[in-house]
Image (cartoon, rainbow, N blue to C red; front, side):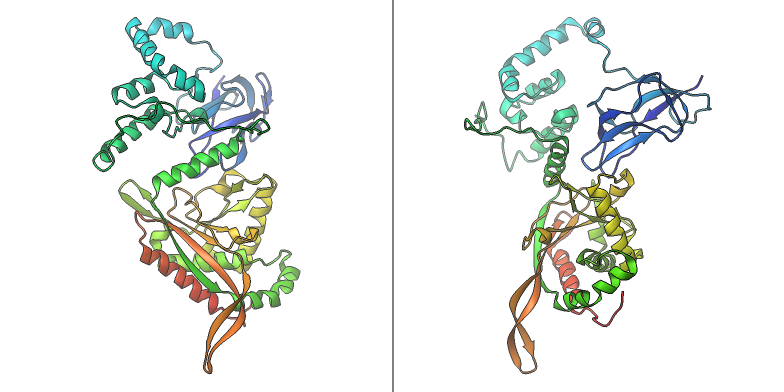
Length: 434
């Protein structure tokens, strides 16, 4: 009978792996076409992976909590249907299988001795920090004269944050290019200073999502040259217009008219004037995105954030944007977003003002090149120019922050985008309808 490999599908922008959180089927169970077999989680979304074919679970290839890369087979399903897969079906080694005997037969003695020599000087440091380094990584570290303390500073992209061959080679390459401006210290600190803990201090492990968000944010800071611009915007006209129409909007469309879809509409209309802000960097190439897919940072009940994406936001009117914002925000809080809801974002907006913050300096959501932070709207005294001279009046004001990647976006463009947004908001047509 044909064997179908159920593989891990693409789970979102820049996501290369996912963690298996629960098997919904066990070996020997029957499964129907389009029926969920396993639950997986990434730093962006939890999701179910369904089988394309009906059949019987022949073999589960990974246990719960295993980290699996995209396009990697998860389970083998025996089916009566002709299977159409690009790659030939081949059994993936089961992680539960004991391969130690095979390794002992295949690895020459001299390489075993070399590995043992590499382990010895790093054993104390690794045990203290509960960090695992493969013999290959340790060998490269020794050849490149990377100390234990320096090795511990390398951000790992492997399972549980482990440093991979690619990670250490990338670090070596960057260090080589920076060696003239910033040479390696001759006498590095042998052991990092331990963090003091009080008797009653609580030690709480980071959740899986917190670990993944931490890695994603740290990687963004290491990738992009972050710079910020700020502007203060008078939103009085827009505020008064919304107050006047919000009840009619709720009666007609069943959702509240918040400021979020209004700002998203203006941003989607302005971005075509600044195509570099709606792009991404690929090595030495700039990819200017055709579609404007706006990510909206959404707070979850547990305090974490997720960024659902409004696809082709510039093609939606205010009603369409308001309905989409309500739908995505509601699904995010109920943990019912699907992988496509968090994919292909080209520009992100975060509303830090909903927590009372005047402004913020958000980290760019890779692989994008810019993110906008909307501050709290406040009543403040402001100086207005009139035909009779300057006067002081109470106005609704908001500070907006723009973080962008200085590798391709200069300060003039980042600032002009804010100025254009300010002009559109302060000249809002109060006679318009929604």
